[in-house]
Length: 255
Image 1 (tube, rainbow, N blue to C red):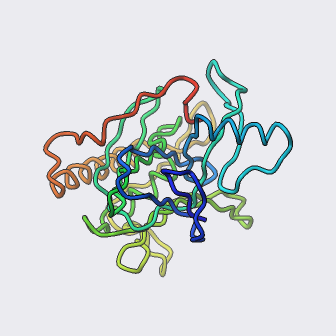
Image 2 (cartoon, helix red, strand yellow):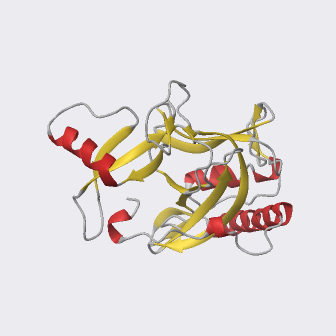
C-alpha cells in the first residue's frame, strides 16, 4: 500500500510506493536496508502510538515495523520505521557520495513530479573488503544505459539463489516502460561485456581471496562522472539546498 508522507496514513492504492501530498516541503530521508526495503525512521507521536501497541502485543499498522538498534550508545533501544517497496514516478536530480558514520555512502536525490518533498535515498557505497556495496554496484552498472531527466520507477530487491546458496541484491530502474540492464553483462550469452575490470583471485596469508580494488576504482569513476553529468543536466552549479545532509544524532544511525 501507499503511505501518505504528510499524514502518515495508508491510502487505498496498493503499490507499496512512496506518495506525497502537494505543498509538502520537508525533505524525506530513506535508507536502503540489507533486506531490500526502503526504510524511513519515524519519531514523535506516531512512533509513540506504534511502540505502545507493540509493547502491548497489539497488531501495529501495516507499513511499519519496530526493531532494536544494533549499534551505538542507544544499542537495544526500540525504534519505529516506515517501510516501502519502491519509489514510483520520480526523476533523479542528483547523485553523490558522502562520508558518514565512518562509512562512504551513496546518496540519490529524487523529485516526486509534483510539489512534494525531495526524497533522499542512501545506502553504503564501499564495503569492508573494499568492494562496492551490492545495491550501489547494481545501480552503477546500469548508469551507461540511464536516460537523464526521464521519469522512472525505483525499487531495491533481494533474493536468495538456493541453487548456488547465494544472496543477490540490486535495484530495478524502470524507464520508458522497460527495466534498465547492466552495461557489463550479456544475459543471452551469459558472459561479461564492456570495459569493466573483473575481480582478481589472489593469495592472502596463504588463503584464496578476491582483490576488488581495480573494479571499485572503475565503478567509482563511472559514478562520479555520472554525478557531474546530472549536475550539468539539471544546472546544479552548486549543491542544491535540498541536497544538504540532514544532521543525524547517534540514536538515528541507520543500523
